[in-house]
Structures are given as C-alpha cells and as structure tokens.
Amino acid sequence: MKHIAILLAGGSSKRMKQTGKDKLLHPIRKTNAFRLCYQAFAESLEIENIIIVYRDEEQKALLEKEIDLVHLELQSDFKPILHWQSALSHVNLYIFMTVPDQ
Image 1 (cartoon, rainbow, N blue to C red):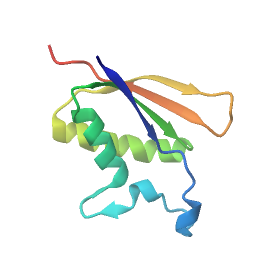
Image 2 (tube, helix red, strand yellow):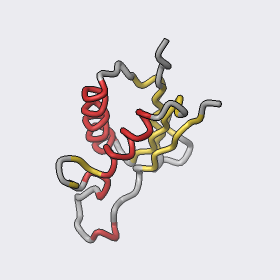
Image 3 (cartoon, rainbow, N blue to C red):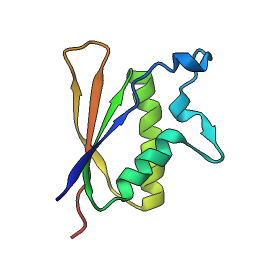
C-alpha cells in the first residue's frame, strides 16, 4: 500500500522570536529541518505523494529551492503536479507527486 506524506511548513515561527526567520530553514550543519524531512519522504518506497503546506509565495520559493537540492542529490525528475489555494486565505497547499520507478 502506498501512502501520502503531509509536510506542514506554513507556520510563522513566532516562538523563535526572530522575525523573518523560518525555523524549518534554519541551518543544521549543511542542511535544514525541511530538507531532512522532505528527503526522508522522497526516499521512502512507501510514500507515493507529498503534500506541502506553505505560508506564502516567498516561503514557497524557498521551499522549492530546497526540494530541487534534494532531487538533484537523489537524481530524481520529481515535478509538482498541482497547486491549490484553500478557502482559508492564509493556507496554501502545494501538492507534489512522485512517479514510481519502473
């Protein structure tokens, strides 16, 4: 059975008390928490789709750069298949789909 992973990245990081800083993108050695989570999902044979909830267009662009780095490392041609903005104006869903190796 295949599964869908949901990565919740849309928070405002208020508890970090550093305006403008995204805790998911805060450096952890040569990576960050978002990339570590995303890569774990992307490498899993049980995960068929990944849904990423992001905050705004600026964060979306930063997350896409991290996603590109993961797929460059994994040598994967993974592409987003759908972008959807929910009825809640502050929540966006960015849906990605992996294509199983044949």
